[in-house]
Length: 408
Image (tube, rainbow, N blue to C red; front, side):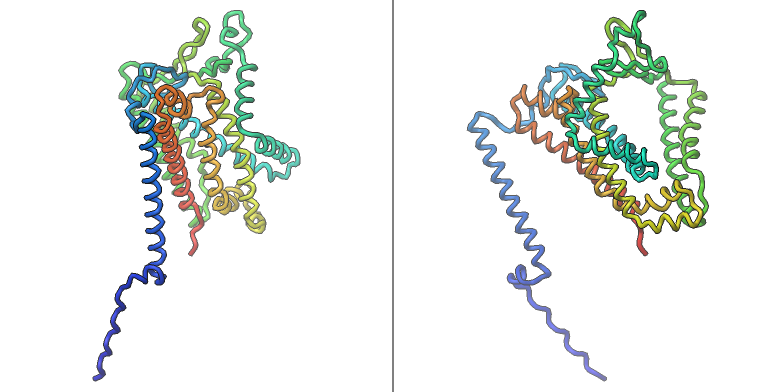
C-alpha cells in the first residue's frame, strides 16, 4: 500500500505580497487610490466650511423651506409665489424631465428616419436628409433654440386675432396656435366618475401588458418556426379597442375642456408655451441630426451580404431592414445613442435663453440669487443632473443587454 505524500504547506501571508503578488496588487492599488480620494474630499470639504465661516456663512439646506416669492410661468404641479423654494425646485425638475422625455422621443424618431433615408436610392431624398443633418449638426443648438422661439413669436397670430372679426381660426376647431403658446383640449373627469377614470387607466395598463406579451410571442414564433405574425396592426388594436369599448361602457367618464377666448387670452385647455415648444423642437432636431449619423453608421456596419442573402430568401426590403439589418446594427447604434440622450438632457439647461423655467432657472438661478446659497444650490443642481444621467444611462444599458446578440 503506497503512502500518501505530505500536502505542501501553504505559504504564510507577508505584507510584501500586497505589492509584489499579482493576486493582491490590484486590490492594494484600488484601496490606496480610494484612501487618497477620501482624504482629498475631506480636505476640500473642511476648507470650504472654514472659508464659509470666515465669510459669516454656514452650510445649510434650510433655505428650501423658505417662501420662494416668485412665479413660474409653466408648472406641472400646483405652485404659487407663496410656495417654498423646495417646491419651486421640484417644479423646475419636472419641467426639465418633461423636456428631456419629449426631446429624446422625438429625436429618436427623427434621427432613425433621417438615418435610414440617407441611405435611400432616391437621390433627392438622400440629399434632403444630408442637408438636414449638416445644417443642424454644424450650427450651435443655442442659435436653433432662439431661432425657433423667434419664429413662433413672430409668425403666429395673437389671441385677439381669434375674435369675431379676426382672420385666425382654431385648428380642427379645438387647437389655438398663438404667439403666446399652443392651447389644446384638456381631458377632464366628470363629477362622480373618479372610479370609472381609474378603471379606464387600469384597462389601458392591461392593454399595454397584453401588447408586450403578444410581441414576445410573435418574436418567438418568428425565431422558431419562421412564421411572421402581424405586430403593428395587432398592437394598435390591443391598445385602442379595449380603451374605446371601456370608455363607452363606463358612461364616457371623461370630457374635453376646450380653450375659449376670454378677454385678451384663451381660457381653459392646456397651454404649451412657445418657450417649451421652441426648446423641444430645437433640441430634438439638433440631436436627431447626430442620431441620424449614428443610425446610418450602424446600418453600414452590417455586411452587404446580409441584405443580399435576405433578398435571395424572398424577404421584402422592409422585412429585411426590420428582421435582418437593424437587429445587427443595434449593437453599434445603442452605445453612442446613450451619449446623445445624455447630451440632450444636459442641453435642456439652455432653456433660460427663451424663458422656460427649468431647474437651472429655478434652483440654479432665482433661488440662488434670492437666498445667497450658491454652494448648496449648485451642489443640488449638479446632483440632480448626475442622478438623471445615471438613470438614463442605466436604462439604456439594460435595454442594450437585452437586445445584444447571444453567442452560443
